[in-house]
Length: 224
Image (cartoon, rainbow, N blue to C red; front, side, top):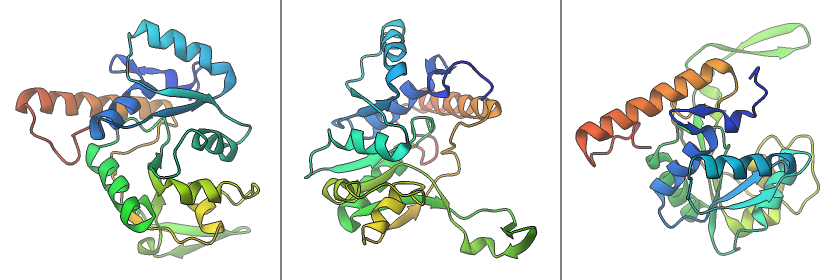
């Protein structure tokens, strides 16, 4: 990100990225129970930002671990077994209400819901120094939120960590459970590079403009 400020705390459209993310989930599910997992050294910074922006969205903060696996496991300790949980990258602030609700609803029915996209570009696989073409229709780009019946994913996270655990879906699969894929959203970008901040802010402002002009009318890709 080329920034001294952790990317979840960088401000876009008047708020830190992470606050936009929380607002999106609260809007999609008003009675949601929110848990933020942060590195121990960032909790004080978050508290300062809460006061600075008078941010009053109810949530719990818990400390993360050395790897994502342990951070998620720490967060899951605060989730009841009889609930449905969505695990989301805090730096995906341009998440639509439609996608959030779809993931929750499908997780109730199928046990899990993993949003994904088919890449539009040509793709190749690498073996050593050789690159071979692959049909892009056989590839899926995985996003978050990844939603699960809480009891299933909490049980899966009791297994030992493996380097092959790239996301929550792989953790569940390793426990012997299949995963259910749902259609993702190309606007649901993960902020990684400085230019992503510009794109995310533009989408947020476009969504706000549409909602201000058209009242409560909701657009699938703009209702955030």
